Image 1: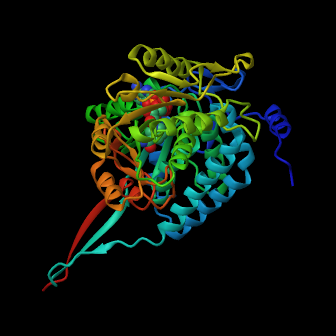
Image 2: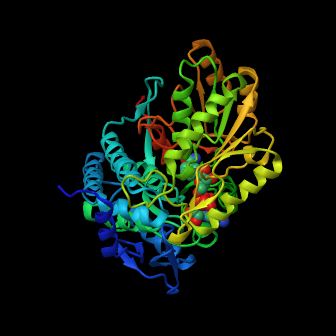
Image 3: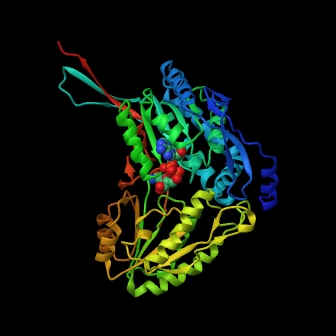
Length: 499
Ligand code: NAD
């Protein structure tokens, strides 16, 4: 068996030629304008590819291909059992090509290769497997009407579905949308983030190899305000499903309103509170798990527990353990399997994240550790794991989504103040509480306004549970059988069987 060493990954990287044309109707093609943009690796600044920069004409072409495929029933009319076979073959191909996909992901957006392989590739293949497996086990309904009629309640695909996704988990965020959309019988046009287009293109190619008919899964690469906007405003897209920032999520609501009132799903930002109480039996364990979750994926996580709300009685101990744990996240070569903290996605994002160090300073927070860029000699984008202590929840660092390895520690007097602080945010994606008191655990989990609540853990995850937020963290849910609802229309059919 191949040993997955740093040398192995570097050798593989030097031989890789990523696909860079856009993918429409089962073919790789250039943008109609011939324009491209550079995909730059945040690991060391190297140019990975010149990627097709799609404009309105290309979006029209992709949507038309998806529409043709939908209307002639080449996928929508396949039996669920047949769609299942193809989706599971696709999942198997993702596993077989796992090294290449993991490498593309790491080179393109900077996350450690060990995570790309063990987390992203595995979760993506599992997602296609799971929705494939589910789709021929879901029954429609017959309503309990009077005996003179039969009323069928059936689910039908929306039609042409567009998915616009971010760069932090490029393949996985795409899979959470594409898998249920395809399982439900839709045709899809996917727009990856411009910072991380490469795995989406390879996935689309593998989908065709697995038997997804051409035109059913298309990818348009390009800039958000051009390619993403064109999809959002398109009159022939039936539903648009977006994961990204809250600001851009609001644009998608406007696009829908300004065009054809297309169905909408939004998975947006977060600033998740993580409450550690003295009633939890092992303060150090809670602090360690919290730091691991805060610095995982360079802190570029929508569910990042970026506000650590802690009772004053255990504040010092918690900060000490956070500092020790942060030391395990020294930025390293993302192609080294031992690296836990890779590169930030690009230079622009790195500068934005770093600007919060000055903000924290000015607002009177203490910098308990970190706060500097790292590995400058590599030409890449690296930031030390950073802890802001003595933060007040009204500070900008506690209210804005930083989306980097920066953790705010907010001391509070008691559980009631912790709940008030937890809810004092425009977001509502995730929250956690650490306590051994069942009543307190229940009280906190009922009181926090968030789509996901963890008790005595953080980032527990499974495809079987819904994922999404309250408040300005979004509308609708990804994952689980609930996700399928977004990609289906409900039809009622009355059949008169009376005299
Ligand atoms: P972003 O909103 O900048 O971009 C997301 C996508 O939208 C990209 O494909 C981009 O090209 C496109 N886009 C950008 N501007 C656009 C415009 N004007 N019109 C149309 N499309 C446009 O987000 P990002 O920086 O890529 O990702 C980080 C954000 O994603 C964070 O806020 C994070 O919390 C959020 N996120 C949320 C979840 C979730 O499930 N709730 C998961 C992952 C990431």
